[in-house]
Length: 213
Image 1 (tube, rainbow, N blue to C red):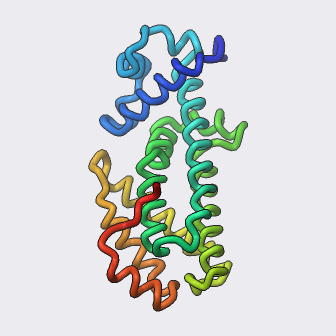
Image 2 (cartoon, helix red, strand yellow):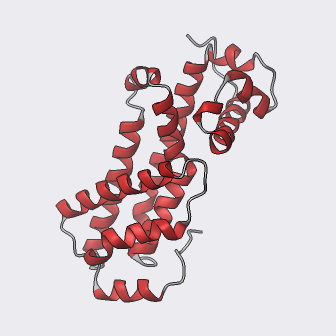
Image 3 (cartoon, helix red, strand yellow):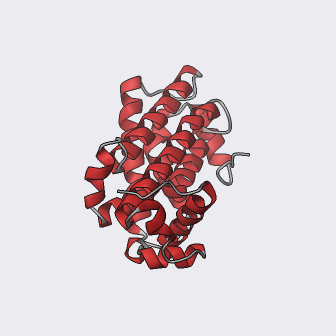
C-alpha cells in the first residue's frame, strides 16, 4: 500500500521522468532507481510516496489515461474546421505521440498492473475504448455537417479500425519517431471514400496536417 500521497510537484517530476524514460528506453528502462535519477530526486522518494514500483506505475497510467481522455473529448470541437483527414491525422499523432502507446507498452510489459488498474477501470482496454468513442463522435459530428458520408455504425467501425491501425504503426516502430505522413496515408486510405468530393479535393491540395493552436 502507498505510504502517502506525493506532493503535486514531486508527483509530476516522477511522471514526467517516466515519460522521458519510455520515449528513450522503452518499458525495459523502467525501474525505481532509473526514474528517481531521471527526475533528479532522492532515491527513496518514490517508495516513500507510493510504496512500490507497481503502485507508482498504476498511478502514472491512471493519470496519463485521464489526460488522454480529456484530449480525445476536446477533439470533437474540430468538426467543421480544416479537413477531415488533416484533423484525424493531427489527432492520431497527438494522442499516440503524447502517451497512448507508452501506456499500452507499460501494460504489456507488466501484466500484473492490469488487475490493480481494473478496480478503477484504468488500463489499456479503457484508453483505447475512450479514443475510439471520441473519434466516432467526431466523425458523426462531421457527418451532420455534410463533410462525411459514413453512417453512425460505419463511423464506429472506422474509428475502431483507425485507432487499431495507428496503434500498430506506433508500436511497430519501437523507439523510432513516426512520420506524420505515414499516419496521414493510413487516415486517407481508411477515410478517403467516406468523405465528400469537396473534402477529397481539399485534402489533395493540402501540403501538411493542420496543427491545432
